[in-house]
Amino acid sequence: MKLALLEPLGIPQDRLVEMVAQAVDGRMDVVAYDTRVEDVPTLIQRSQDADAVVLSNFPYRKEVMAHCPNLKYIDVAFTGVDHVDIDYCREKGIAVSNCAGYSTVAVADLVFGMVLSLARNLSACDAAVRQGGTKAGLVGFELEGKKFGVIGAGAIGSRVAAIAAAFGCQVYAYSRTPKDLPGVTFTDLDTLLSTCDIVSLHVPATPQTHHLINAEKLALMKPTALLINTARGPVVDSQALADALNGGRLAGAGIDVFEMEPPVPGDHPLLTAKNVLATPHVAFATAQSMEKRAVLVCENLRAWLDGKQINKIC
Image (cartoon, rainbow, N blue to C red; front, top):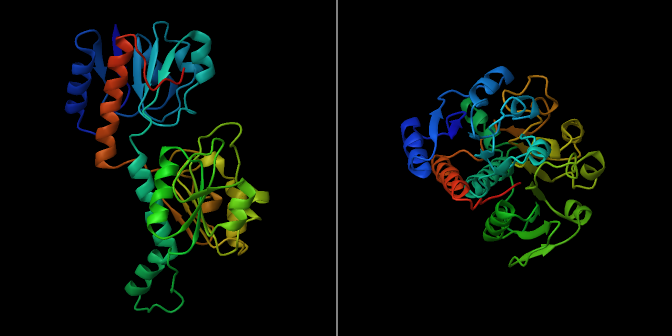
């Protein structure tokens, strides 16, 4: 059988190949590509003879897989899988696993990097110093005592809730499946949005969560509130969020994810909206998380070859 590593995965390529070779233990021929290429013809060329492929977060759709008659397994080196045509995989009996958990610490860390930056006006403070200014107009607020809302109480949302509690926040959460999280009050979405001073999103991109945060929901939030999105871009209606920020109906937003992968077009409404801290889908990416991800990729491969698929999507 043949395994195609369709892109590098954030650790030295020779180390990745060595780890994968140990995982498959001679049961597969491994071909590793050291460039990330997303166009359909190249993906077909790289995948067409493979029995299994490894990829992270670029689109991998039917138009590629239809040219891959041997394809039996997709090892997604990412948490979300909305970029993979899962319906087609189910139709064709192609197994899919993800790497949930590798980025939990990394994403939660960035959430609070964004929260603290917005709460204490760090970007504006840096600019003021460089331009000979003072703290005038830049006095921020403390997190202690603020109401912090977490939408989605999976592994990342739960960690964010715990960190918020450590800052002395009153923590609220909304989730399809409420959990017993110490110090966290579960409530409905509208109550959370209208109550909280900071709202952090941690839900996957599904038809049910598309534009979960829209103009109607944003209107419920306090004009002094902050919104943080390190989840998936389509969860938020970007134009509605930009309108709320520019209209003074929301104080600020930290945005790591957009409707597309970076580079983000310069005319995107959030790039010109007031008080937006934007990052290029980097929340998941740290030196430690990339190492954790490679380990999970290898564990997935080994388990699948042993007939004991783990981290199963389908």
